[in-house]
Image 1 (cartoon, rainbow, N blue to C red):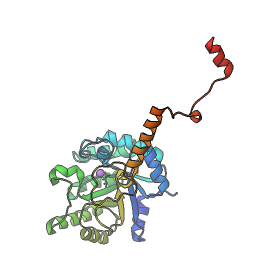
Image 2 (cartoon, rainbow, N blue to C red):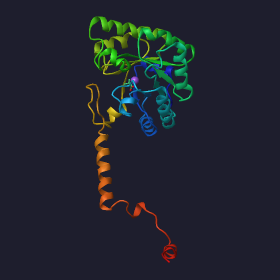
Image 3 (cartoon, protein in one colour):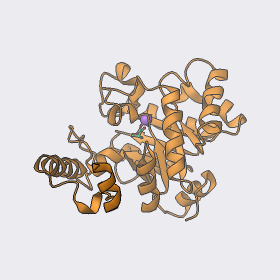
Image 4 (tube, protein in one colour):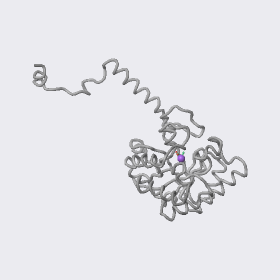
Length: 277
Ligand code: KIV
Ligand code: NA
């Protein structure tokens, strides 16, 4: 399989081929996602919620992102990997932003970084361009701003906020982003943005008018049985599969059925006899 590049991702938009992006946070999942033929893997800071069990993405650190990106890269050597810049890692100063993104590229091996925010981030994005670090933008519901936004809610519902998101998308394109995630915005707004931009949009809860889609792998596979937002489609029910498999194991251990002869190791008769003396 040929690994994508930022250039090829932009070509996909111009030739009307939709981009399929999915998250992964560890080696086995990355292997499965690569084998599926997905276009892009996102090591999202959703890690904090779906893997580490936090309520929000805010507790995730840069070191967490680097640690998990390394595992993903070992499992998906031929897939384009984008890693989220976590809370505060792109917000303190331009030098810190470049240094942090640089670690994600250099130490973890990601192909690009993703950062949340609109016009207020363009100086940071320009500095990353100057450092040859490709940037994916993220607009609409930006979960690192959950305490400002007052919850995980649909964004861009009225004229003023929709216009702001639309303009922010143009600002991000102008600053050099190679793609933009649009999260939890109404379909007509996401479609208008997608039609106006020359770079691809990747939607989540943003409708079918985007140039690509992204889902969190735990939601897609049904790995957890937590509350699922409306924009998620479950393509599997791994939670049930996991509980059932472990139940069977528990039962077989308690009944003395596992391990069976196929899973154990014998010893030569003379060795056993010598031990018994
Ligand atoms: O962290 C994440 O998984 C994301 C996607 C939902 C876009 O940012
Ligand atoms: Na994220």
